Image (cartoon, rainbow, N blue to C red; front, side):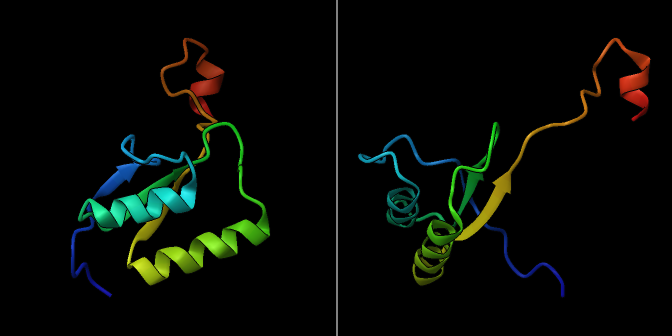
Length: 86
């Protein structure tokens, strides 16, 4: 499967979204004419399994691709050589 299209979206819920909510963010992405949104789980995963299924359904219906951004576990810029070697 090759790349057929480039998807453009936001890192997180767009700042223009009136209600700071993932589903509202997906709808705002669609309204902005974008086709992707990154879910930012920088400190923790903040969706329950039930809510994640709802988010998936809304994104699919809106034609919005979702990606996730998780924590960085390795600091490649650490002064500690042992951490960099991990």
